[in-house]
Image (cartoon, rainbow, N blue to C red; front, side, top):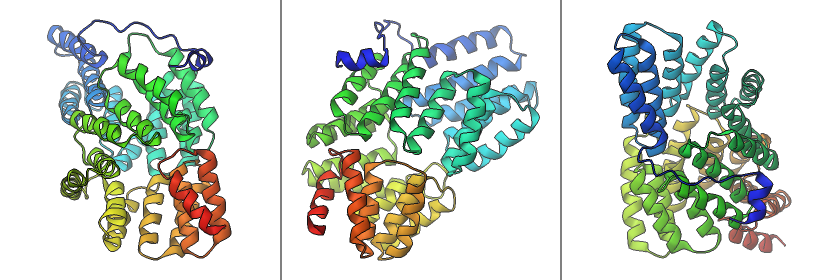
Length: 410
């Protein structure tokens, strides 16, 4: 990492502990020991459920959510509808992407106890994922006020700052969160570093992002979130074979369809066409199998049908399914792109402009807006969006195509 970045953010990187267990594994073991000595107490089962949920983030293994639910069932058997257990139930619903049910439960908990910071965090997460950004901002502010700028409050506020277009503010908040994390929490530190790297990637600061990701992987080797973002660094630098290799490692660590889609795209960019075709076919089968569930790869499936399979009608159908569940900026973007692929540029403009109206400064979304405006015959707006995409990140995955289109407009 560049020393200037480390000093500016105030990072103090500690030596990796030689302890064999991850933070979540230590918490799981601790909870199980308490349960063994006090099996009639509900609270240790809550602690076990939360530790298993943390392990799910460490490993991207959805089975851990099932194990957490089993622990929670025992908690409710001992203490029906206990408040801490219900908070963890909402947390698990969020982890499984059941955002609507999570929101309803979080609202009931907020009615029950009006000043619980974690409940406001649950409200923030659910509203954000559903696209209710005003409500999400209000809940995040309550969380910050009640939690005295805790790490969970700061990271949620940072994500909202990013969505509202204040990337610099998001970096400041995420950096502040990092400085508050206990040094023994290696996975949490790696996660925050990965989020910071993502913010640098948005603005084309590839070398700075790579330094942060290197440290994240030192803290938590093989971390699937860090591998994904390091692949984006390689893509920005034109190192597509290395990107594909990193994304293969990520898919092996976290074998989800959305991760397979990213691998297939990277293989295609690396001209490993036969591997890419096989990966795309496998991705399509996996993604279609979970289309109707909350936790799905419908956005990736939309882009696959629009950009790779030449099936715009199916892209629009899949995107429409997801629009019935949530309307965050990225779902709106996928739906707009499917409309564009189907030749419905007027409707596509309405949805992409709704997404951008939140303030988000994502170079890919801005590029999509430019292409859609061009499809609608509005070269002036197209040029503006394409220039905004390039000014946000001149090294993004869509930068070369944005430049080509701008040349045509000129």
